[in-house]
Length: 135
Image (tube, rainbow, N blue to C red):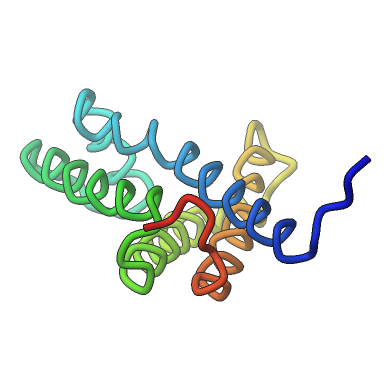
């Protein structure tokens, strides 16, 4: 077969990481827009915000959708990659109780967020190298 150069491998890897992270975030953002009551329940349980106004769910969803679109197309990298990293870090750290008790029912699923967080860190640190299908 044809060998890929290191640069092409890096570009393809960073693109795959960017697209997969965007795909992971998309359902959560859509849920804020189409199911604000689910967002209210999540904020109550994990962020200790007992009464998130429905309009806040829509506002968060719209803002995050804009950030995610910029991230997906590789625009405003310092801001969009940083914002995705920050959002995922906050959501992962907010589940610390589930992370330290993986043996309890379904808590092991929360660990999937940890390598995704490492991916977000990697992509943020490598953002200047991420040029394939990037504006």
